Length: 401
Image 1 (cartoon, rainbow, N blue to C red):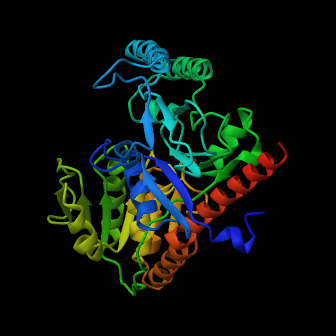
Image 2: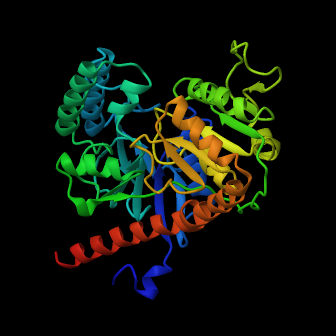
């Protein structure tokens, strides 16, 4: 029976979602990934988060001391492995993210989707799909300031450790995982160059749930920048580009959301820049996007499609992002400009979008791009087809044994 078979297509697929959960894991874009899948799962897919599965007992994290009674022999071994692993991580040589040693209750799930988390299956385990936005090498070098030498050493240590323990790490070539989903062609090419089977690495765009907004007629007036990490996400570049924009469009305004105010160039017109700092998400989604005509995010540390960019495109707001290779290659066109993260190219893209005739078409293009590529109606079904293809291949393999 294949993934396209009509009887198989509509069977309920029970998926254990090993992905960061709001209120449990640190904030970040990976929480939004989980929330998007839970809000709009693929048709015929029933998700259970790892938190709910642990609570229900259908998932057990091994190597932890029980509250009552003695520890089993298998858990003693896992506890030893965890102790060695944590000791190594405290030295700062490998990366900080710990492995998850997991046992899944028999027949509880049809498939496990591990997003970001490195997992070590203990005992019988359903077919595994992994996903991630970018390798830890990029995250630690660009965001945490590790040196290139430190990153290379940590990667070698992580590769040896994961191989010795038998852990599936999403940013290495798949071992046990049937498929790994990544968020850019560049990431896929890197995994293939490292030895991954091209058939087991898929580029899968991110998405967000909700309805498309209406196209905007303009003329544009306000450039928006939304991020809590001002320098990493190109805030200084946006300020410099805005100086060039306002020289030709004195009516232009810059709205900065999520970052605390800082000193400005005294040459900027008084009142041309508004800093809002961190605001409730409901305020951003409910009213602030209505004030933004063009979104600028020339980020130097991101992957896939940043969620603020997705939210802007969904509302018909043209965007200017960087040409960072880890961003989704589909983020391009009249509604989603990609330029080097430098003031002159960003200013040039903003000046083009501030042309009244260009802006209306760019707004329509932004909506079309979101609807065709980043709507969860599209993304969720692509992920669902991946699940079903993996399960169909697993059933064919089981049938031959």
